Amino acid sequence: MGVLVKILIGAAAVWVAVQIVPGLHFDGSIAALLLVALILGVINAVVKPILTVLSLPLVLLTLGFFLLVVNAITLWIVIRLSEGLDLGLTSEGFGATFLGALVVSLVVWGLESVTGTRR
Figure (tube, rainbow, N blue to C red):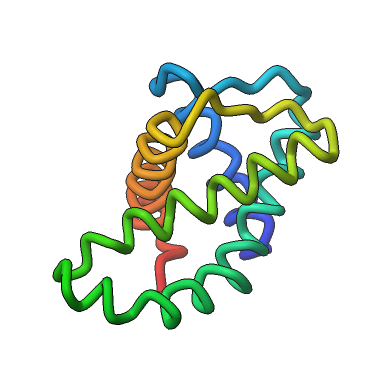
C-alpha cells in the first residue's frame, strides 16, 4: 500500500511541475503518468544515491546546493527514459528540467508530510 501511495504522490508532483514550469510538457495518459512516477521512484532509489556519493565533494563545497543539480540530473534521466518509451514527458532544456526537479521535490516533500509517508 505504501508503494502505491508513493507512486501516486510522484505522479501528482510530476503533474504539478508540468503545470507550473514552462518548458516541461506531458502529453500522455494517466497510466503513462503513473509509469513516469514509477520510473522516477526507481531512479531516485537506485541512481540518485550513486550520484550523491560521486558528487560528495561538490555537495560539501556548495553546502548542499549541488544536490539540486543531482535532482535535476535524475529528472533528466527520467525524461530521457520517458522519451525513449514514448510516455509523453519532455523538456525543452536544462533550465526547465532544473525548475521541474525543484517543483517535484517540493511537492513530494509536502504531500509526504501531509500523508505521513515521509521517512
